[in-house]
Amino acid sequence: MTDLFLLLLSWSLSIAMVKLGGEGLLILHYNIHFGIDLIGSANSIYWLPTGATIAFLVNSFILPVQYNNNRQLKMTILGGSLAVLFFINLALSGLLLINFR
Image 1: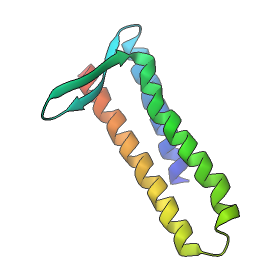
Image 2: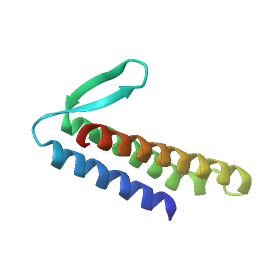
Image 3: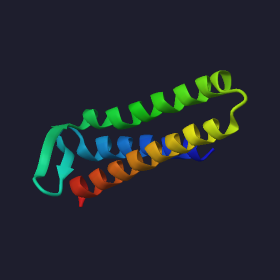
């Protein structure tokens, strides 16, 4: 349930950035040592939630079939999926602040 909430949050953050960015360019990657590394179109921001959605779907469909008996392995994979979604939302929040602050 938490994974689904974080997935929906990542999509809503991405949609908000595209709406605020309009037809202009957005900062897509910022490095603390070098500054802005990548600037691109606003629609390029959709790659982050798309990757999260693919990871979520793969884990949701393959996990019950492949690892039916090993509960500890299931929890480890689901925890990893949760961590990926958390860090994607953290990156999107940072990009939102960098672009529109």
